[in-house]
Length: 345
Image 1 (cartoon, rainbow, N blue to C red):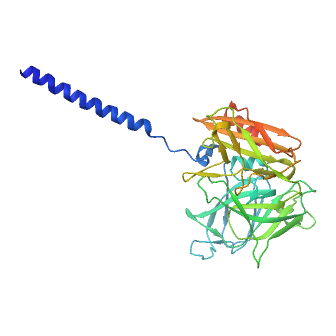
Image 2 (image 1 turned 60 degrees about the horizontal axis):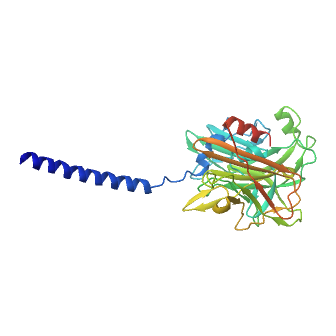
Image 3 (image 1 turned 90 degrees about the vertical axis):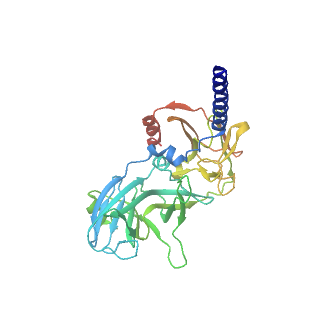
């Protein structure tokens, strides 16, 4: 009898354990991992920042590796309370983004709302002292140009990453009291820069930048052509806005554009996605007609699936008046080769 009771008890326990295991398994199978924001998914594509140190309270001019001029005045830096920093060592980190490939790898595009921008260069500049973040009061910045036929007038834009996906959005420094505009300055008018730089220097100089982090030398672009849509068709359903980003490069105006969508509180870096057709459609401020027809283009698609990179690159001499709709043939490749592809843009 004891053996029967013991067997019955073991059988009941086994049933309870089996039910519990089945319940846990069922619950687990319904849970989906939260999607990784693309700024984290593509973080290892970003440029390593240059490290520069300057002394506070002095008039100092320094240069980035790509020729960006930074002119700090004795009153250029302030702390979180607004007090001007007049002494001590300030640590700077600088990322220069002059070409579309550098903009793409650092998630900084060249659009402001629905407007295209032609870029004379972008930077991401940050300052700390003893590990504490500093802010800009006023400082000078010059964007180096090696093209004597560059656009004659540029404006200063400031960026922000007020979205989960950290794609930079740009706003012109333009108020009723202040509008920062620069004309192309050559060695005849900027000899002091050329002497400090050690060779002829030409570029756009802004004397009173008032923000750090993302800063852009840009001008609004509109050639009068009708704007048309841009669509990339993915090869299969594994490429989605959760792991894929689409960029359109307009090389003639040094422009790289992409957009962001928000799904469940998380931003993904492409746009409107149609799952049945596997179509990723670029949008801007809800608009699908976003790029002028007739322009030379390069369509870049980059994906990161399970730590492995894929990319597609297609180009053409003129965006059709019906819009750009291309099938993306995704090539699996190493991170270094993806970076090489971006460096060539």
